Amino acid sequence: MGIKSIEMQNFTVFADEKLSFVRGLNVFVGPNGVGKTHVMKLIYAALQSADPKVSFAGKIVRCFQPDDYRISRLARRTAEADNTSVKIISCDSKDQIGKSLNIEFNNKTSKWDASVKGEKSWENQLSGISSIFIPAKEILSNSYNLNAAVDKSNVYFDDTYLDIINSAKIDISAGKNSDERDKLLKQLEKKIGGKVVYDMKRDEFYLKQGSKNMEFPLVAEGIRKIALLWQLIKNGALDKGAVLLWDEPEANLNPVYIPLLVDVIIELQRKGVQLFISTHDYFLAKYIDVRKTDADSVVFHSLYMTKENGVKCETGRSFVQLNNNTIMDTFLDLYKEEIGKVTE
Image (tube, rainbow, N blue to C red):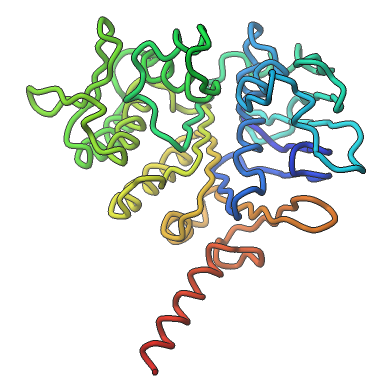
């Protein structure tokens, strides 16, 4: 199970747009401010609402954190904008169209009192699905009592940060690791130099290197990001049928780790995990383009701003063949500038 498509009318930067996804790896590229993270947060909120205890509208405002938790502030802010609507369609294990989850509101809707349709059938189909959202900023090093502090309004973090801490703490794996999981874990262990451990009494994460534990805040942030991926795989959160959404995995990561990261991402796709990744990084996108095979289910979604119709999307199987590609354009500009200096 997973997500087949999303349709948005007058939602944040989107006037009227539909994005269709593959059951494997979906890579979002585009400049800042075109809604890459917004799309992923909508998808994540929908997946989380497969739990009967979670409201779709409530999860949206906790992930986006608009002022006073008013969902109306997520309406597209133009004079022409009227009602806002979002429709998310799921897919089954064979990538066939499943159920739809719909939400509607306008700029006068109070709090998260939006109109939601299709929740019951959505819950019936996607109940028990594992959905993980990894924010751009590493957060496990700040895990101590963070959820309690947010509950008391002492600090403010959106739900993606709180949820990833909980996902890293809870082991849902069933028994012994599979050979496939062990292979991925060992690949990552070589780069991080150890394994992740969680001390429940101290409510802290450590990187265990031999017989010594290194406090997470003392570990380089790039290493912590790979360590988080190790922990999620170890805990069984990224087994077949899961959905992973990762916002800028390359942030604060040494480029030397990009090839390994891409190998793990592509391998998770091959093992039946649906992935949504946003990136501004040429190397990450290019490595995915080079290392995927014809048998892999990988597409690139390039989001770009138009003057009259809000954000639009171009989708293609090849990163370098996208017409709207600011990452590639910038890379080519740098190349031309470098060649110009050489030929002076």
